[in-house]
Length: 356
Image 1 (tube, rainbow, N blue to C red):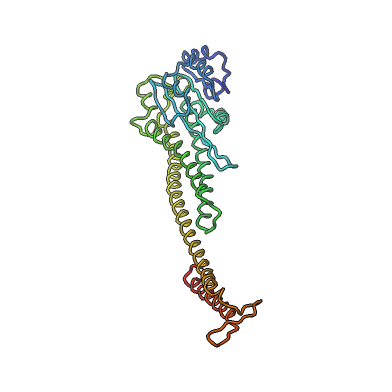
Image 2 (image 1 turned 30 degrees about the vertical axis):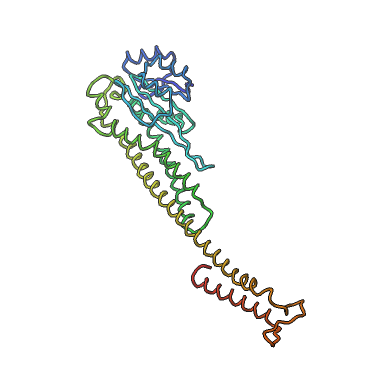
């Protein structure tokens, strides 16, 4: 559905009535631009907007399908930016993903948001409170949306960093209350962040940051009147470096997130390897203890099995034990002493060797 639509002239909001008439007026007057915001639109709702704006068919195909890879594409003077949005779910420590598509064309901006992550209402309100920045035109809107998305990346980055520290501390503290599943889940969340941030950084480098290939500067050199090259205030052309500086700032923040994500991924691999090694060591230690106790228990069992039934002089029996002509009444107790002595000797031996 269309959640908001408005016309902006000189950074000020103007009520938008009929889309077709308003867009024709904007193009005739060469002043201002139209900003339409959609949230989870149906095919019919998007087709209605497309009928008025005449978006590029390939861009429309991406918008209808959704779930696209983060990218920035240019189509004959227009631009499509696909941004993956992230939201950290505190209750489950999961990273929820969504999508924002931004269409920039001749005197219009269209934003299509899918999912609950990164609402754009706050971005629009902040832009409307800063008329000077909004007067720079659709390029400023694109920057504000990208800046909001990347700021959320940094928030998710901070939460993942805290989760990583907790897991690292639990693994190397020697406790057994952590399992490989928690490490693997966090590694998957890091992968979700990488899927969102890394392609976007590559696209921004290709489109905005490299001056020789900058979309904005190409539009200004060609002089085709695209909104990215004009401020939207009476057609006044702005300095390309003024707009590009904002995108380079977003790029810096994005690269910082990517650096963190790379380090998290490597560290989680090391933590997982260390955890599995600890499990192996603990299992070997447990097996040594079990083997030691089994060996200790085997000695009296063996002695009792061999000699236990060969004594007549034991409690509750009257007959004595004879060795030749000698009658011996304490064999039962001697064997008990041998068993206890053997067990104590084995216990001390295993204790010294570290098995117990």
